[in-house]
Image 1 (cartoon, rainbow, N blue to C red):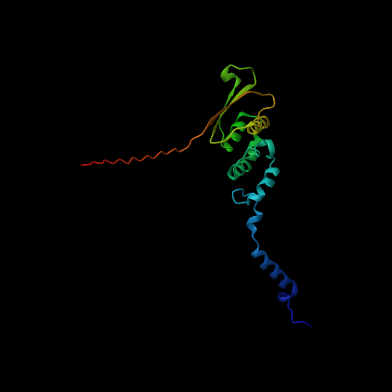
Image 2 (spheres, rainbow, N blue to C red; image 1 turned 135 degrees about the vertical axis):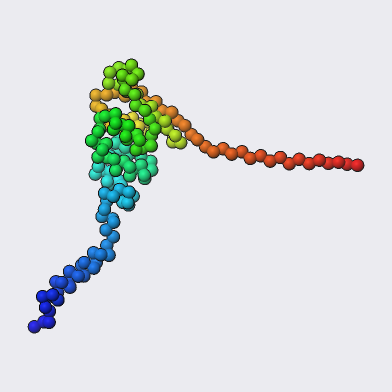
Amino acid sequence: MDNLSPLNDISSYAFDEVFARYNTLETDRLLVYLVDKVDASALPHLAEQFHIMGNEGWLYATTEQEKRNLIKNAIELHRYKGTKYALRKVLEILNLNGKIREWFEYSGDPYHFIVSLDLQNRGYESTTEEQLLDLIEETKNVRSVMETLEVNLTNQTDYRLRTAMITSEEITL
């Protein structure tokens, strides 16, 4: 007979070995819902899972932080989708300073609205406009119609000018 007692059998050795390997695993990689700590390569998969790919904000998010903020707020955005709050929130998440005026605030046609955006230090081209229109269309109320999209472009730069003047005087005797 073997000298293996019930406390010293082969299965307990196997369990100890598996448990020792488990302690060496990087479990942080498994915590994908800690959006601020997850690896950037997992962000597109989380965005797809929370249904914010494409026109719902992902295409317009330019920085990794904007993408993380969009994922963190995805449930709230879907909860209030179709409201002025959701549209304002998604613009805020994507660092777009904007105002939304509804028809009764400017004497427009019923269920129409105007979006005014202040784009600071961002480029603006036809694809940007298409993405913005798709984002607003995806987030707004179905019965509402966006009447106007006003875009104000602002760029700030530091322009420093330095001058020097050298003068001399010659006296000949």
